[in-house]
Length: 577
Image (cartoon, rainbow, N blue to C red; front, side, top):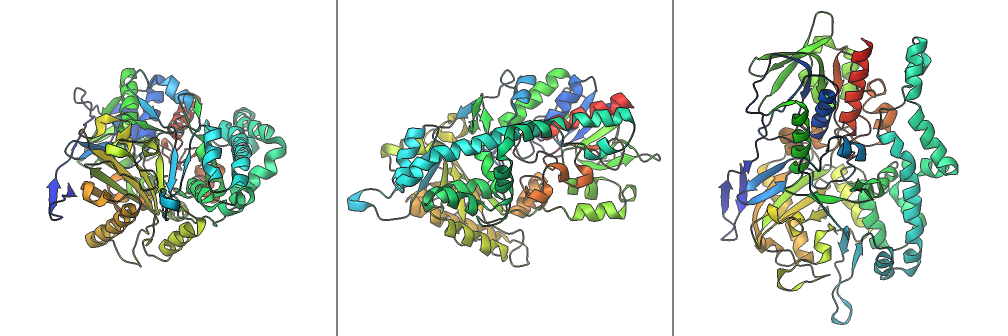
């Protein structure tokens, strides 16, 4: 249930949103499977599809009434369909797209070009609108846009893009398999060592492809975004716009060490064989989950919603034997895969007696800090920006972009971060606005639109205390006040809003700490050490229990790879049993 604010005296109206239910209503839940997957998010569904293709009778158990995990579509207000949590598609690995025939199963993507729009808060010169920066796939257009702020930067931009592309291309092999099995190479039988040695090949390929660029890559992944961007550019709007790629979903500022790696994500994306592309899924992000689920069902996977797992069953031999639901129903299986976060998997779903105190202490040290509050907004009029006004509510190219507000300079971003670090929501938050209904008319009634506001920075606790409804509304009011400065009339157009703070994201979607990546994407939690050094191969200390979610390598955002990699490891383990 969500509160919607009408324009008639700011009166609160309660709407009960509807969702698309995805349970296999025609299929009865069996008492025995080969494999059980806890959680019907995209990685869990991908894992299930590959397991079933490999010959294992597989079922997916989703606790919510709607399938998709964080990649979910929900009609929060009548007639308005939202990508309620995740909101853009990219980094869906091409082999998964092809293997599962997702296009055949209904996945339709609206490509965005241009992709980034940063309006300024300033007085226009001689009656002209305020300046703005728009970036897309057209290099000449990008250089013209950047030239409004710096001709030097306009000339450097092509080399910067090439530099990122070269580094991103080199690490692509690391995304499509588990991390190198270093312990396996050094211990065990010769057969096991040889098998483990094969996992080193992606790392070797990455090193060979980087070649002389290894020092540059090392600097990029360890340096703060400010160091990298200051070396290339001088104009603040360009640096701040690019810096948002290093900050998105992370509790860090532009000058925080180690966030340079995430800059690669704006060129690592790929859709429909187009590098660096990000798009809107028709019907919202739940369309991705629906397509994967449809593919999985076509292979014979049983998928159920409203099946809340209470605990993993562990036998007297210390191996996973299945799960018990909250209603007491036991379902047995050879293996169990958890698409939940490592924290939820081992602190909530696994019997405490089955894990050592040392292991639990290590799980407690995983960083789930999140700066994100997501606000979903229903509007009856398209936002009209002072920096790029359009007549008659007609969308311009910039309306399909990720619209960066309060991103004029790096100092604004750093200040917003420092406030949250001290336990306070940012007074001038970093805002990423998207309006997917500009390209996808299925999301809103005629003349209306859905607006996504991905806001940073907000702490999990406000100066040590829990968020209240008053805190949520006050923060959203402040966000809307800032949007109003860029697009006057926005506040009057709002007919409903859904405010999801970090604790809300945790409660509704199972995202520990509200972290959209199932754990921070910091250097101490990537590749060989994601989520922990001895958990990087999806296997848990309990035989037959595996992790398949974004808490595993290669992490959140790289859609499908954790699930696909986990399925491969399960199949390998069962083959060698």
